[in-house]
Image (tube, rainbow, N blue to C red; front, side, top):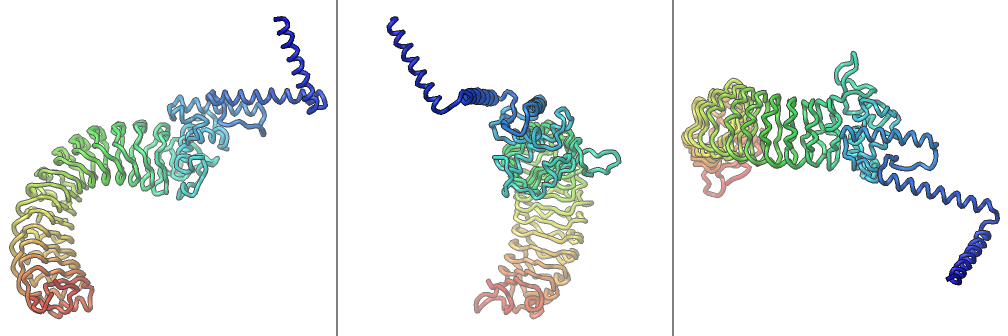
Length: 558
């Protein structure tokens, strides 16, 4: 054993001699060796520092090897820790999003606030979190994933954003006004943000940063409509308790409407139309008792319309059209006596239109078309006469007679009843609709003659009577309806000749009379509408050598 130990020591001694010789070859002086040892110690310290920072123990996102003293570095690190901890304490961001290796909008924003923002606001400043949130918004929607500005992420207007100026001067940011300032005046300072309005600003992102919801507690209006922002509506939106207006329409938001949104009882206007929202409208919608306007149209919503919507008694405008809603129209909706505009068109709604429709005495626009509504037109609709200007019931399964009470709608300008199963004759009382401009009755089973009383509609521009069972002759009195531009009467049982008096309709652009029992020569006065005036489409049964109608000026013969 002693021999072995002696041999080992001898080999170690020999190895040390060889190492010493090599070091002497490289370094010709003892100072060189000392410098090498010192450099090794410095590298070891740096490696240890990097290892510690990777565990996210409060170090800055990157290490500076020059340009700042140790004191400056420690001061910046202390600033970083304070701001980071304040963000986490306020639950403004998720901890993981602030990690230095995350390359997230949150980590970029934090570094900007700590190091790059020339304003260098105090970590205890009451408006620091709002400035941080806007920085997150910027990095999420204005830069690529590496934090760099690109042409693809360019905004239409980003004036003053990410400068040393107070964010109350940044484009689209409106703060609580300073003393003596008019509302909505922008100024160089930081204050409570009341409105963030970046509508039509070419914003693009697959996600809306939650920090806007978690930090802007005084926000009253959020308008990011008409952009290209996607993702879901985050549950954190429920923290915007001061919110009165939410405008996120015409984007690419998807997923369900979160119930947290229904906790914002100060909301007056919600427009989330033209998105990809799906699922049901929450029953909690009834909590929004201050709601003035609700626009959820052009989405992929399904299920029934919640009856609780009847609790939103301040509603003036309700837009649920162009979804996949089914079931009947809830009776509670007729409690909304202040409604001026109701649009439920293009859904899968079934059942009758209640007689209670007459309760909506302030209604100006009613769109129920392109559903599966059945039964008859309710008589109560005549009670809407004081204000109703547009009535759209086309594309349903309505049956029965044309309701006489419609004649009481004295302010009506547009009446659409096409593509139903309506019968009977055209009521003479409808001649009192003197302001009517559009009358569409096509594709029903309407019978009888065309009443001359219809000429009382002196402002009528478009008259569609095609594809019914009308009979008799074309009234010559139609020639007095001088504002007519579109007259469609094809596919009926009309007989006689084309009246000369139609030649007085000098504004006529389309006239279709085919598919009837008309005969004879088209008068020159009518042909002059083609040759001299604006009649571009004129169709009769003039095809073939033995055609019932002779027409040399028709655009098409059938």
